[in-house]
Length: 108
Ligand code: FES
Image (cartoon, rainbow, N blue to C red; front, side, top):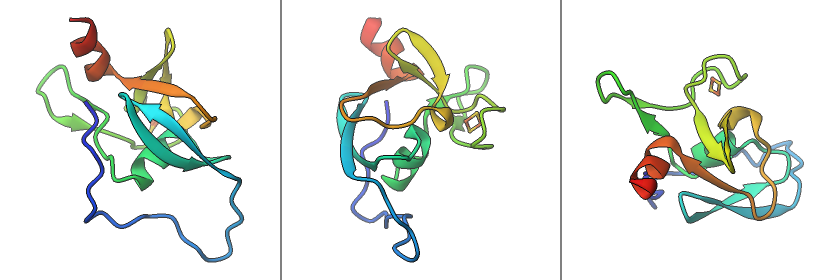
């Protein structure tokens, strides 16, 4: 399950020389996350303070965003019935994603 963002985590979004699309919200593991049009799911989760997306099946080590270009597959999440790299999925209003561990726990 994605840990809730901590109020102690500062936003990583810069305010300088950046034009953002409209703000929107999407659901990650049932939690509402703020994002901006044009961001990837991975970027929005990272900016919200969520660094861990899953645990390694081998040793349980936390795994998260690494390459941010779709190569490493460390950021896989469920988007509907498809497992996709979060860094390659653009946020859209009402989008719902689940982390692998969250879905596994939800479905038992
Ligand atoms: S961070 Fe490597 S595929 Fe998304």
